[in-house]
Length: 319
Image 1 (tube, rainbow, N blue to C red):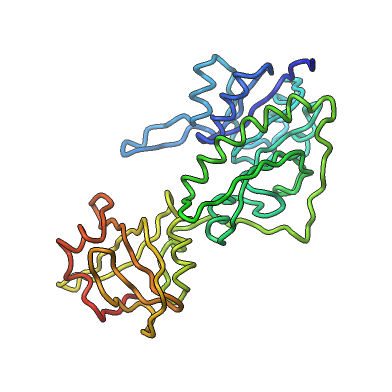
Image 2: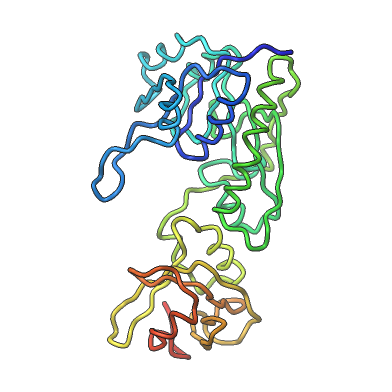
């Protein structure tokens, strides 16, 4: 039986908190928690603690919230904890070499992709955006690069045809914590030999932006349908039309499907009926089935057309 490890945990959002909860239910000892400083949230812009901080405080764990780990004082504080290992899950701060080298067994990271594919900030979203059939989680030994460390363990899952970033996130949320515990249990005994990443297979998952979420009708319908799923729950795909008075109206799109191509200019509204709003694209037709006008809840295309059919006359050209 391997002895429990003394662990520093570093993470910030709910995805990280799930891992901290798994560690707290394991034989290992969480001796300190690092998370991002409290940030203003909500209409009142009150300071809000991260999901990780909230869980740590419930368990009376010491919490550290440095703005940076690059200064000597923050590094000395961390080194003085004498941890066996540091576990990093969606922390949000860069770890300099002095921090990576501080724990006896180094720093482990839980990354939401099958490395070396989709290094970087948005691996879950980019896997759907690109049409990947498979995703998963990689536990790796961190180095100074961006998700370039040696891989210790991978777990896999399929990406379903209707998968959104939110649903894939939940799949990985269930897969990853048991994988992390398994690696920690066998770390000291060397049960997970490090495997270098093949640089030739690497690519990067760029951050998402609200600008990218605007539907571009010059793209194929299949790509746009993937964007709609990849950008849910944020930033949500959208397009702009005009109402009967010529005023611009922005509509978010939550669901769509692809229909056979029709030879009309991209962005043309082809027809509307209870099955959706059909729009020509560079290749194929995108049929919008669930939308959200500003200030309203998401609704079916039929419900939207019941009150706003004048926004979508056949033949109208969308920008």
